[in-house]
Amino acid sequence: MAETRDHPSTGTAGGAQDGAKPTVENRWWVDTGTSGKRRSPTPTSQRVPPPIVGERLFGVGRDFDQDRARARLTDFNLNLLREANPPEDGWAYLAMNSQRSPEEYLERVRRMIRLPRGARAVLVDAGTSVRAIFTGKPFGDRIVELNLGGDSSLDAWRNGEWIAERAFRSRERALREASHLVARYLRSD
Image 1 (spheres, helix red, strand yellow):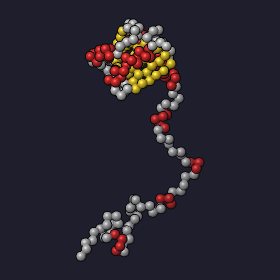
Image 2: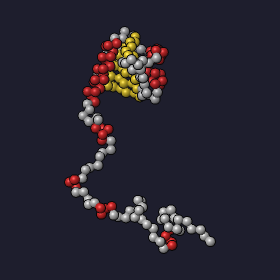
Image 3: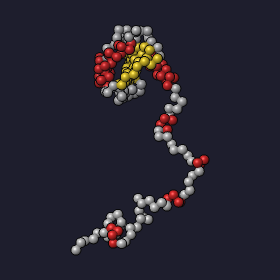
């Protein structure tokens, strides 16, 4: 004799073959067509357009003046160079907060990045990251900024005009390539 079990989807023994009809009213996955009857369609004049994906994120950048921000960054780098007042062919150091990078690391950065003749550089230490800002002759005409942190990058400016950007896979890679790139972007044409 065959054994009968309750069918999991219908709740009846052996499914609907015994003549018992499955109950669908209490099944959330069954569309009985009653949801459209409960409410009437919203008039077009009252419909709210669906939100644009990422609108809040991009709203932050609304009215952002990229040229002005770039100029401020160039000015900021120049102000840091002036404040540190590095000697020609030498380095200066500025700490941005009480947190400091290890002195061995700072010395390694200075050793690995050879300054072109007549260049000046300042190490700006934020504790978790270090920025090296370079300028050549004339002072402030060309500026190169090397960020050594989680996302290492290099940016270069000529006469306040942003001319280059470079991202690196790692801080080590940035340190290996920095001497060549700094010399290239500080060189006068």
